Length: 141
Image (cartoon, rainbow, N blue to C red; front, side):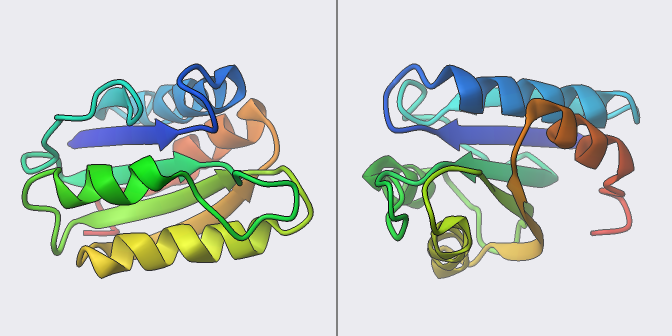
């Protein structure tokens, strides 16, 4: 299956979030899926139309949580036909209210018509790899 993993950090080069996405992709690839990774801050004109499953990740923009990077909503609104896409939302652990940040990300995705199948707060890249290995993308279709 074609899977896309997109992420947006506080800055253009968020190495922690990039590491989490790479490990997530590695876990999915171990199941035989083809995974593309895009940074929403850099690859702003990417279209997600032909992907079967979309993984969206971000981090809180403030210490107290409650905000996601503005580029997430902008990217999703310009990403082509994403309505009805099966997807997963994740945020990296940071600040005090990671669950609120995750809720805001999920709301932004659902606002574009994406169909959330799973969501998670990820603390370490190793956890992302484990999640990618056990996620059954075909079953989630």
